[in-house]
Length: 394
Image (cartoon, rainbow, N blue to C red; front, side, top):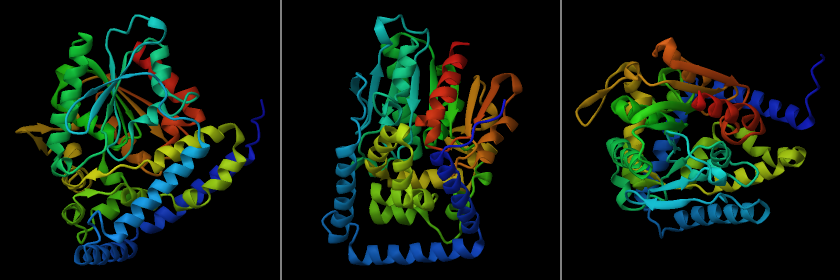
């Protein structure tokens, strides 16, 4: 059978991916990382001296206004997001736990599933819109789904450390899931940064975790280039960002990630015009991307130091509440979902997990998808979502 020719939209996406990949390889060069770090430090000096990080400063007001305008424009043309009915319960600070019941009054599966997203973005990447909702898909198969909603971090959250997020928020969420369902264990599904945090929790609390599903998650951070090349530069100090801003503004974090896929972001409107079948998904994703939230500053500095700079979880040196967390101690069945076109998380860093776990506890699924497409792409609905459902049922 002769394979079908790629559509114009698919060919355009392939061009974006190839060009972004070439640009990223250039940014790993020592000269580029040195120059970019010097620029960042100079910019932080200006922000610190001028008071530009204060909420009422014209610089901050302009950035926030630009983000809100982008969000309003995206919402005006996109389908409504986060429409699946759920109940919401408070956790700690701004964080909340969202509960999605099995569809049609079905009897829930024996173990619920808790989804842990990154702190960088909103929870509704898993409930994007009515035509593209992972939680609705899982609930339709009889799963009782819980989603950790980090909310919008405020003044108090700026002091959150890594231990507060893993033991405090995720730990409280797991306890709430087990209490509300009467289950003794929960499935954990972590996406991106949320996958790293979910893995850390599972290593430290094996009795509470039945299985672990990872989606677009780095394991060996030494292989997670180019981010590690940028974040581990000796002249880059993550605590400087935390001290200047408190919580890193959403627009600042978004700008950093746009640097990983510059051509994709610059040419995105053309792709939306070409991909008619996926237009609603592209527009709803634009709402999600524009709806950026602040990132707790102390947590950010801890995360960069522990994982990107020290590679502590991989090397078995991460300590929280007096206990050591090491990947090799992960003993629950684990499904690792990897996007071969992921330019946020290097696929080599994700596949490295197989080196740490026994073959009998480890399953891997690779798909020719990017980081965002792993969660919401058309390919995810036909490959990633069914794979997760079948593996959980098995």
